[in-house]
Image (cartoon, rainbow, N blue to C red; front, side, top):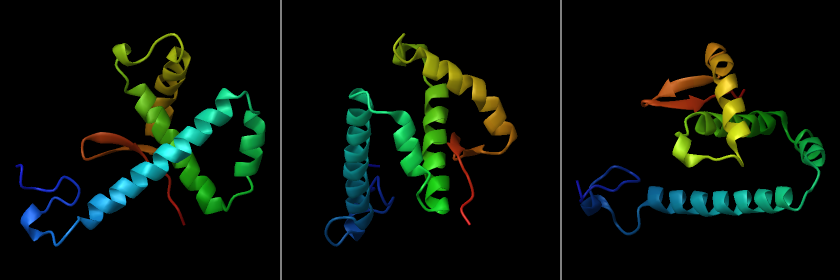
Length: 124
């Protein structure tokens, strides 16, 4: 299906210029890369995790819920890694993620969507 846009799932012929979904996905990807880069630099410099947690705790409650969802999705990702994609440097993270998955699944925090496990916390 070479003539189908991967972002909006519509035929390329229906596009009148760049696909809005493609632009949004590109912007989202660039922003995510920037955020992960900043976080990586922060933790790589030995900055205090507790300070980061303290500042996050001052965010709006709905945003705290969304940030928790992102972190839980990270655990879902780690728990699904085949052995060839981790080593001694992050093995404990994978082990912890695998250990908490049954609890997350039993509490319906991790659900199956479109054939993949996904973290979900309600936002009200």
